[in-house]
Image (cartoon, rainbow, N blue to C red; front, side):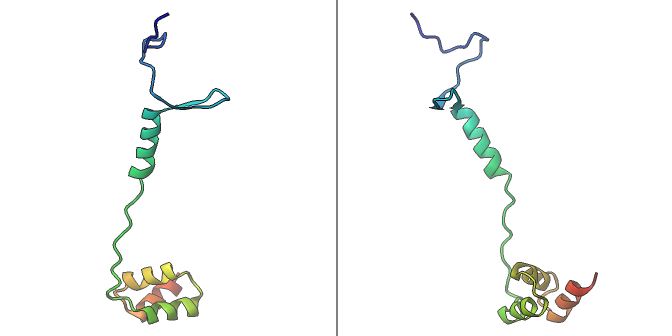
Amino acid sequence: MSHSSKRSNGHPEPEVVVNYADGYAYSKSKFEEGLRIIFADKPAKPAKTSSNVKKADVDLIVSELEIPRAQAEKALLDNGGDVVKALQALITP
């Protein structure tokens, strides 16, 4: 009995990574393709440019408006580190 590396449909048999008892199997190429999709599509995190943002300013906005720290930092960054402008931007609809 000879072992063929092709299936009956003519396509080569994929390299199987894991065979499970319930009959499922995962191929290396599909596994790698899935990982590429997951990790390649993630947006890159922007570099933090907190040179204009002071911790005290962020703390003030967070405590006064009771908003998440990230939102306060973003408002300050968007407004060049100006606390008054950041507060106005956050409370203006």
